[in-house]
Structure formats: structure tokens, C-alpha cells
Amino acid sequence: MLITIASTRIPKVNGVKKAVLALTQKFGIDSSTIRFESQEAASGVADTPASIDELMTGARQRAKTVFQPLKDERSLSIGVEGGLFRVDHSVFLQSWTCIYDGTSFYYGSSGALPIPERLAQMVFDEGIDLGVAIDRFAQQTDIRSRQGTYGVLTDDMMTREDSFELSATFALMPIFNTPVYANSR
Image (cartoon, rainbow, N blue to C red; front, top):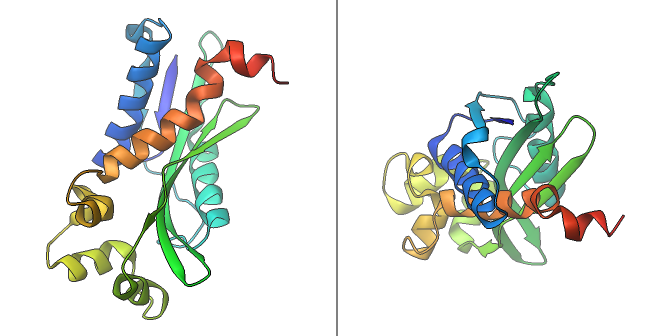
């Protein structure tokens, strides 16, 4: 099986790979039959998506863009997107994954982590991209390529990579846990 990941950012790629490898082990699938490729793909949404709809749309667009249909082998594409959404007066950070198999889309999300009001103001009111805002907020450089905003806000209990692993695990469940999901259609 070919799995094309619609990103070259290390936390996103590693999170997806960890999810796939954990699921192959759980469901008794030979992981040596899986090939991974990664490539950049535009999301078609803001650099910092600001709603669940934007997060899901961005992940879907990325997955659809990199899909590679194959004749003799199953192919999946995986789009991942991280961003914010607002509920009432609170703002949350969340990661979304979309899997595309050429016919259907499958979605999963991480947990939603509340972000500090000042960080939310930087993104929503001042229009600063979350990647830049978290660097300024935490007084560090290139956080998005390491632990991400998740890592800063959780003191590294949950990292950006972990959030994408969780969202990818949930999105992949209908594909790997077919006995349960096949009976629900």
C-alpha cells in the first residue's frame, strides 16, 4: 500500500507514520507492505485556520491534491491541518487529519487544547500566523518544527507530533478496523 502524506513537516509526517505503524501492529498487518511518500500540498485555507470547517477543508484539500491512484496496489493520501477554533469566549488548538482513498474521505481530530487569551489575540486580533505568534509568545524560534504550540502549552506532555498521531489514528480507524465499521453502513 502506498500512503502519501501531504506535508514534509517532520512533526506531521512522523505523527502520521506513528499512527499507521501502531495500527498495523494492532490489527496484524505487515507494515513492510506499506510505503510512505511525503510532498507539500496547499490547503486552500488560511495559514492558521480559524474554524473546524477550515481545519477539515484544509486537510481534505491536501489529501485530495496528493492522491495517487495505482492499478495494482491500494493507495491512500493523508492531509493534516492544525489551527484554532473559537467557542463562545474561548479559543482552542486542534489538529485534523483527512484520509482519501480515491472514493471516500475519512476524518479524525486530536483533542482541543485551550490557548491563552494573549496568544488568541495575537492570531485573531493582530492577524499573526500561529507559528510566528507562538515563537513570540514563548520567546523561542521555529517551535512549529519541534514541539509545536501543543508542546509549549502542555510543557511537552503533548507535542504537535502527538496531536497529529492522534488525529491520524482516529481518521484511519474505519480503514483498519473494518469489522466494526463495515457493519455500520
